[in-house]
Image (cartoon, rainbow, N blue to C red; front, side):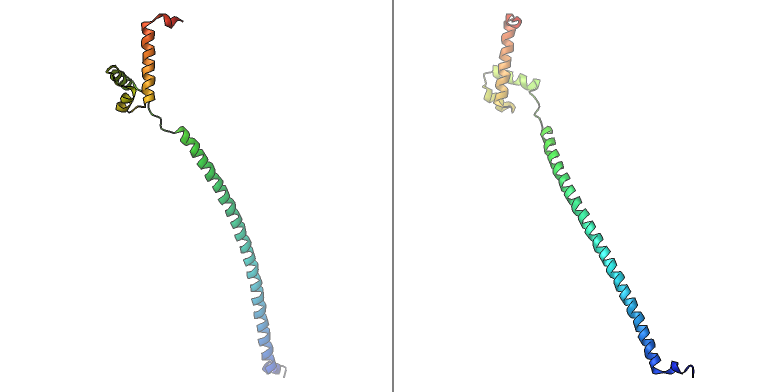
Length: 138
């Protein structure tokens, strides 16, 4: 008779109820752990998003500074036209002696008229000083 309670239908129901309570407890604790993990995950995602935003702002500032530096560097790297070399100078003077105007000389030698006029003016001053040595002294 001490073991008759095992065969009782109430015992079976009690065991099933205890098993269900254990399963419910495990389910509830698992659910709590998953919620905690999700909250940590969301916090981590927010931190990463904030850091990403800071990096984007830093990158935009760096890009703006780079553009500014490139614009300043472009001013220094502008291609310079070579000066009036000796062969062009002698060609211009030869054409002037033949009676061509400064504009015609400039067109034929791919120079500006101002450059040719300046060359002719300096040449005239040099010739004048060479013919008048007294002006050199004063």
